[in-house]
Length: 254
Image 1 (cartoon, rainbow, N blue to C red):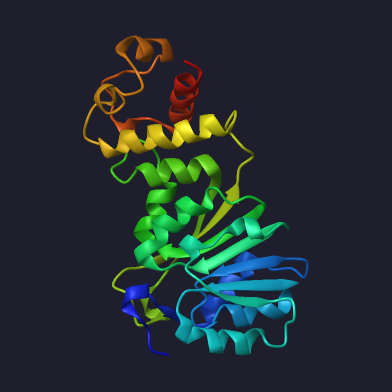
Image 2 (image 1 turned 180 degrees about the vertical axis):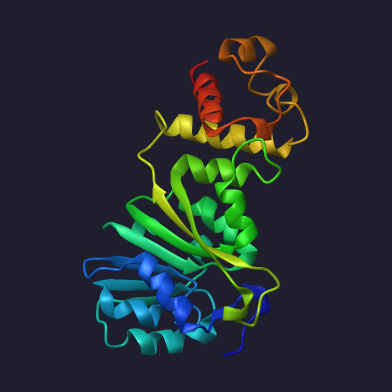
């Protein structure tokens, strides 16, 4: 199968790894599974017979015929030739599980998009190891950033295992990791609070090297920092998720 660099494609070719992925996903008959970027269907083939339905979202039109062949005998499964970043997940009314070997070049954008998808049971993704490490990182570390805060606000995260570059074709230049994301019960008071959280986190990390009294000056005065009991000389990576929730709630109410 010819890969396309512009789509960030790396196809799984090791059945042992595929079996390990399936064991962690643990598909059951009642599941409706959405697979993002199924590629040549390597993972799809090992799951589709175990579940009620699969929906395969694949951007590369040259792969659609192969995927249609795989789903042909499964009447409740379908292939959607679309860019996942443009896809409307609200089309799914029932609870869904989402899996995927995400394209490295848009993986962060996909994660941000999935933060706002409802009816999720869980998500299992293969991602660049560096991205997964950022997603699960703690505050006060160099790799802790906007992706860390957003992911951990919306999901309980667990890195399951690392994946060698040798199980893909073509072989990527980096290692991958497999991560499980379980959606949290909403931690926001309302949509306005959620939107403010998004904006505060974005502003803080856009000025990552600045003290938060500077990067968040649009939202908070020195007096406000005192009221929040947060030191204004801290930087974005020094604040935990709960601090960003506290700040956004305070700004929303004042």
